[in-house]
Length: 90
Image (cartoon, rainbow, N blue to C red; front, side):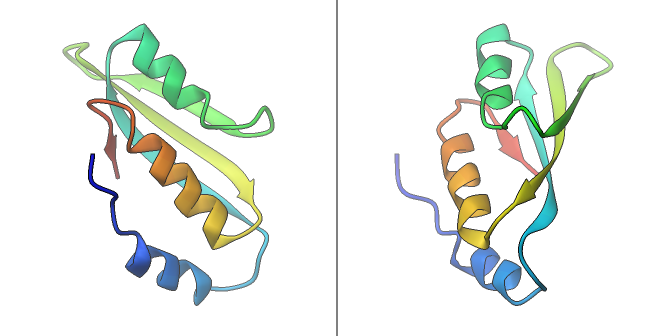
């Protein structure tokens, strides 16, 4: 898999304020228990994670708020998420 370029996102994050701060992640993943578990494993126990099933039940929306220490931590999280097949980051 080609490495995704998060340079623009990293620059925006670094220029948008002080760290640490709470960051809001939003992902859509196919309704598959294994993939859902992989997405949930991206977040620490202190994260506030909520799940919402799509109307037809084919996808699950995963929203998470977590205190992040730096822009690098956020980019690292997106890089790990990109390895989950079928995942869409919003």
